[in-house]
Length: 126
Image (cartoon, rainbow, N blue to C red):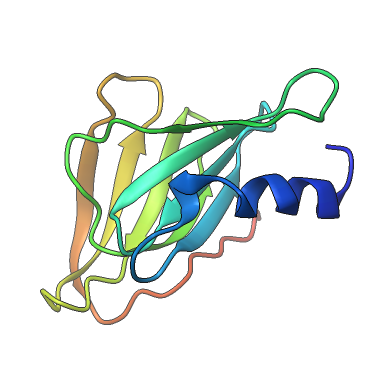
């Protein structure tokens, strides 16, 4: 990527990121340097792919099998999957889910239910 300012300008000018309520929340860097960005209120994920020169990001919305309920934390796993924390303030049932980024459409599998406000998602490699 050329510079943080350049990338931020691209990011802010994309119509995809102008959610009606709360916008982007949660970001993950994949091994190939693509970014996955959660759109909190929209319940969707967006992939940002940077070209070889690092100056023309392309954004695409992921076709998830179900909407996410307020994704907040994202963490890429080495097996091509993505851990997602879903805050779920409306249903009150926060979740930890896995999305298989190698399958189409992208399956969303809940692995833990009934979490109280699972904000952010940070893991430390041991």
